[in-house]
Image (tube, rainbow, N blue to C red; front, side):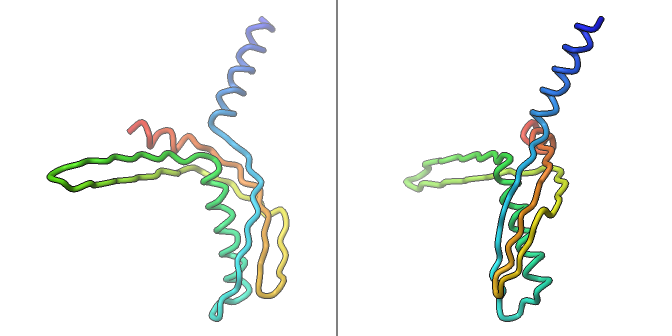
Length: 116
């Protein structure tokens, strides 16, 4: 009975680890002429989120066709997930805003998208 429970827990944790990733990501953004400090902070956080998502997994599909002497390349990339973000640290040193986030990423959404 205990052996079955341990095996079930082990398999469940393996399945969860395939679906969820925790990524620590840093990013910075340089303030533009029309940016406020809040805008700069938000853009730095957005960049960190995007970078973390790309690190968690991106599926790239390419297709090359040659027709009537013309070469046509089509490249598609997919990246999708549910992400919980925690701001770990930030620093504003004019004109740069630096952030460090912890992204808890569930990549199951990407897996579903790829299957469809």
